[in-house]
Length: 318
Image (cartoon, rainbow, N blue to C red):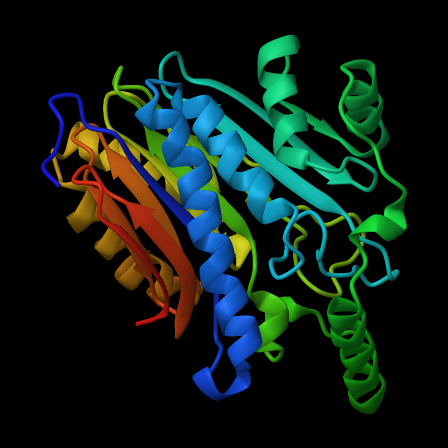
């Protein structure tokens, strides 16, 4: 298939982390690939009908939030208190509009709440009960907290507590001793035929996170950024490092100020800047010409794209 005059493209990720092929059952592997493809096609169908990148990103992420295989929406990991607390953000590169929610426990699809914040408020980020009240006021679907629970994630949480007890100290997934717990944040970037770029990210955070911890996913410029002049970026990994290095914005800024290609700057930020700092994870992105990047420094990042030629691909390992 040849590229169209006004290119469209979409890329998604389902999280990056240290995970070995042998630890993935064939059933889980299949569900990763199937859900990634379903998310891509949901977004791409909108783009093919001359729809907006904003609608495409929301549609793709909703698919992944509703799939318990990922650490976002249903199937999110548990906090140290045994709760599910979700974060999400979205950014429209057309006018640098953005919205985000953090620490929500009853919003079925946090990406929809993030979009509502962007479009229906003068603010960028709402957290906790305020975010949930805002979502309810704007007609978004709320669920009971137990909706997000899955036995797989609960067993991971219990395993973490057992290891904490054995070590006699708190131990969160940020210490990277629990690879599977660290695998799952979802994100999407899309370019529509009008040249608009949108990026979105959604997550349940890290297993065993404490004290209302919020990572990079709802932080504009850290975990999510989009600018029609440069690119759209969604990040996944050890959020504290992505916040400290403003990863998503830094990539776009280097394209602007240093005239670097998205491919080159993404590789340098992920493979050099983050690695030297001790940060693990990856990014997905699309530039103004529809070029797609999927860069990660971990053993795996579930990911997929439909590029400007219409080629579809999904993968987990390198």
